Image (cartoon, rainbow, N blue to C red; front, side, top):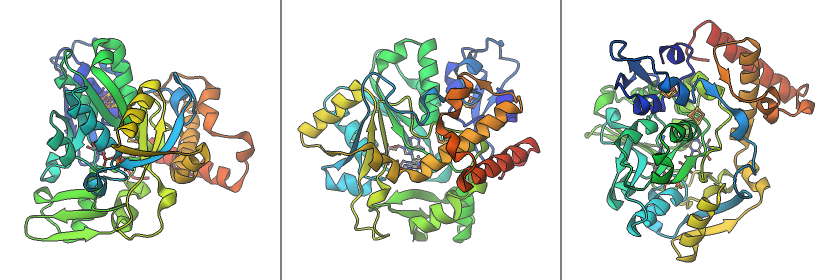
Length: 399
Ligand SMILES: Cc1cc2nc3c(=O)[nH]c(=O)nc-3n(C[C@H](O)[C@H](O)[C@H](O)COP(=O)(O)OP(=O)(O)OC[C@H]3O[C@@H](n4cnc5c(N)ncnc54)[C@H](O)[C@@H]3O)c2cc1C
Ligand code: SF4
Ligand code: SF4
């Protein structure tokens, strides 16, 4: 695990913490990201942590390629029919609606999600076991959370939904091979479309730039009240609300706040999920927060399809089927980033680094069309990949 840290390929999922039978691993945060700290005296060198780690084991098979699992992918725009829930959520409140409906009908007893807490240091992944808790955790958290570390709390006799980013779901799928009971216990996997998780320092930078010096006393809601939502920061005495363009645009979204592992990630569309949810960015007309949020949904499995259809029929979820072209128009940034990531991976592979590539060279290149290689965009992508790998090789944290 130290090797994964040193090579900066850890994305902080926490699955190594959950799998370790010797309890030799704890998760820490170094101001940038969550990472595992190993107690060498307890470690028995069983190797399970490295086996389940999706940081160092890179498989591009389920990257941006579609139509790959047990049914044809389907694409929807949708939102919760509960207007309060929709207003509080990150986009259309689809995830919170699915979780609350599944829990109210008794199909699940818990969900692994993330909580904003009341203070910065309380932000993390949590196991929630009632509807009100789920509602309290709606919206997006642009801060490191270790979703797979929560798996340690799950019980084989209960059923759960796991919500996470592509990297978390990749790690979970690996863990399911080690612990087959998890396949029965995880009723559904819900993915978040993910460009990157900003370093923790990006949030600190944002708070300080608005005069909140005692950052640990602050609470932050990254997106609330409308769509795309304002970022609300409070220290108990003072509260500010920032436009999305001031928080994501000026701090969280900057490349210097993007971990190297995210630069190399081609799994931003959460290839291991039953249902993947993101923003229907194409619908964005203005920063007017009266605009009602709508989620963009990619449904990958029959399990996902049956959940969506059921809640659509019962009137809890509004769904409109859309074409694949609508998905690519909404997610042009994410698709461009995933293509850049393929160039980074190719360079990493050519440099014979410590990464374990599980897929073939051609699968890894699947995001790169040969005709794009010599276009201006292609050349720009190659240059930014060279820069990222150079910074990586000389050990600089910001690119
Ligand atoms: C780091 C990050 C990057 C993202 N990048 C993109 C992007 O590039 N393009 C895009 O379209 N969408 C992106 N999203 C997804 C988007 O922000 C919304 O989360 C998504 O549209 C779900 O909306 P919703 O209204 O259906 O969910 P809601 O009903 O608001 O529910 C969201 C659920 O996700 C959980 N959650 C929030 N943050 C995390 C987290 N970090 N880890 C695990 N669970 C979490 C919450 O606890 C809640 O249960 C990103 C999300 C994250 C966390
Ligand atoms: S399993 Fe997850 S937290 Fe552990 S080293 Fe790998 S990426 Fe990091
Ligand atoms: S970009 Fe990839 S590695 Fe980074 S947080 Fe998102 S899914 Fe994980």
